[in-house]
Image (cartoon, rainbow, N blue to C red):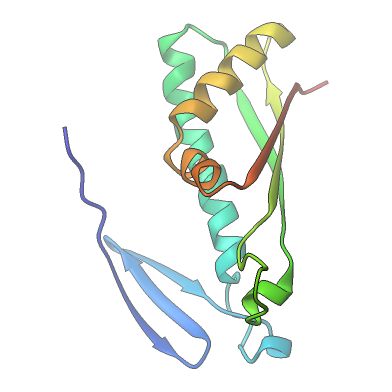
Amino acid sequence: MSEVEKITASTIGRQTVGYSKDHKIIIDEPPSMGGNDEGPNPLGTLLISLVGCENVIANMVAKEIDFDLQEISFEVTGELDLDGMMGKADVRPYFQKVTINAKVKTDETEDRIDELQKIVDSRCPIFTALEAADIEMIPNWVKEP
């Protein structure tokens, strides 16, 4: 089975207005970076995409393994050295590390949450793409108290 994802986009200055199907997405920079701050920056958008992907896969997997998934809340941080984006040689212009803190609302045990997380991370296209780029991925999934 094959799927094609296609977007269209136009840019003015530092702002990008993109469309995925009929959905409009604005990616921008804050004024300090020459933008109008009308949307998240590209790196923030990437992390939001990671959360969206992890959520979709988690719900698919939960159904497959009969996991009581009620809700997941995420806090994700990406660490990078800005010198790479500014053109400094020998510095990667992308994240060095991404930490995913997820609170899972469920009646399941911590062991089952670990099982869910491992399966999700192995099947999430964005997680695995970041991992393949040699980004240190740190998943911390815990049961919501």
